[in-house]
Length: 96
Length: 453
Image 1 (cartoon, one colour):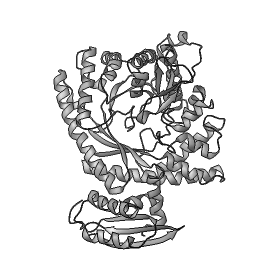
Image 2 (image 1 turned 120 degrees about the vertical axis):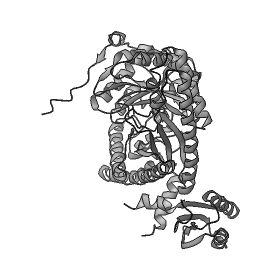
Image 3 (image 1 turned 180 degrees about the horizontal axis):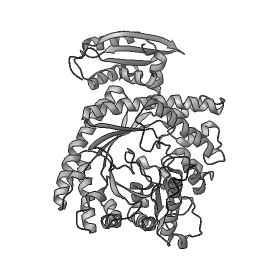
Image 4 (image 1 turned 30 degrees about the vertical axis):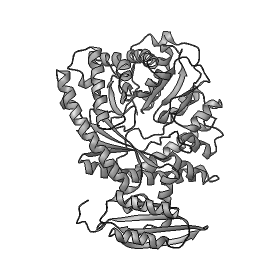
C-alpha cells in the first residue's frame, strides 16, 4: 500500500431508520479525513434506509482502522449500522 | 462495472447475519534446517523463527481484516512434523516433553493460540524416534496448552499401520485420563492420507513436500450456505446444487483474495484455500442444519448421507471454480460437539456412531469431536480408528478420528468442554469386542491401485 497509489476505493454501507442528516454527517466525516466521495446510492427498502457510498481513501489522513472508528461513532450516535470494506472484496466475490 | 447495492448487501449480510468468516490463516513453517544434535540448539532456532513469523502473522491478519471487513477468526502456525525434528536427539520422553513446552512457549510469545505439527507420519512403519514421540504424547500434550498433535497412521499407498493403531488406542485413553473430561484428546487427530497443507487444527502440519513457508487459508460459511438453502425450500436438487455452488464460489473468492494479500504482505508463498465448511458452536453456524434445511427430518435420519454427498460435491465444484489453489481437507466438517445441529441429532437418537461413520464415507474429515464412555476399552477405540481409516484408505481420501473417551461418563451424559469446543452427548459404543482382530497387528495391506483395465 504505497502512499502514491492512484486510488483505493472502499464501499461504505449504511442501514437503519431514515432520518434527517445521515448523508450530511457522513460527508462531513469523510471531508475531515480528506476522503473523496466517488458515488452514492440510496433507497428506502421496507421503511429501512439503505445506502452504499463509494469513497476513495488513497489520500486519507487516517488509517483504515481510524476511519472505521469514526464511522462507528457516527453509527452509535445516529443508531445506524455502518460498514466499510475495500471494494476489491466485492469485485472478487461478485465478478467472475 | 460498479458493484450494485444488492451485491454489496449480499456480502455485508454474509458477515453480519450469517457468520461468514475466514476461519483461519495458518502459516506453515519449515523447521528442518533447525535440527541439531543438542535440544538447546534446536529450541533456540525454532523459537526465534516461530516468534518472528507468528507476530507478523497476527499483525498482517489484523490489517487485512480491517481492510476487507471480513473477520479472520484464527491465526495459527503449523510446523514440520516434530518426530522428524527429534530424530537426531536422545530417545527419551523428557526430550519430547521439553520440546513441546518450548514450542508452547514460542506460540504464547507470538500470541498464537494453537500450533500444529506435533506428530509423526507412521503410515507404513515407525522409527525409534517416532515411537518415542508417540509414547511421550500424553505427557507432552498434558504439559502444554497450545500444541496440537497429529499422527498419520494409514495411507492408500501403504495401507494401515495396525501396530500403531493398537498403540494409539492406549495413548488416547491415557491422554483422556490426564485432563478434565478427557478434553486433552481434542488436541490430537489421527489420520489416513493426511494432507500436507491442511490449515485446520488439530491436524495441521507443514508437510515434508512444502516450501520454507506457506500461507494457507481456511474459509468457512455453514451459516451462509444454510441461508441460501433455506431460501430455496422447493427447488429440485439439481437446482439446489447450483445455488450452493454459486454461494461457495463467492466465499472461496473472498478467501483467495485475503490469502494472496496475506502471503504478499508476509513475503511468503501462498499455499491453498481449504474450502471445508466448518461449523462453530454459534447458533445458525451448523452443517447439520444445512442438511435439515434441505429437507432431511433430522441429521442422521435416512437421506442424510445422500444430502451430505450433494452438499460436499457442490462445495467442491463451486470452490474449484473460484480458486486454482483449493487444497487441504476441503470437505465438510461434522464434529459432534462443535455443531448445535449435530448435538441435537445425537441427543434425539437420530444420529448414532454407526451413522456418523457412514456419513464420513462421503465427508472428508472423519469422526470428529465425539465423546464415548470413559470405560470404553483401548482396543475398542483402536477398532473405531481402524474402521474409519479403512474408509479413507480404500476410497483414496482423507479420514481422521478425534475421539474423546470421557472418564466416568456413560452414554447419554452431556459433557461440556467449553468455548470453541462446545459440548457433546456421550455416544453409545457397541459392547462386542474385536480385540482378537486388532491384536493380530501387522500392516493392513494397501488396496489394489493397478489392474485398472
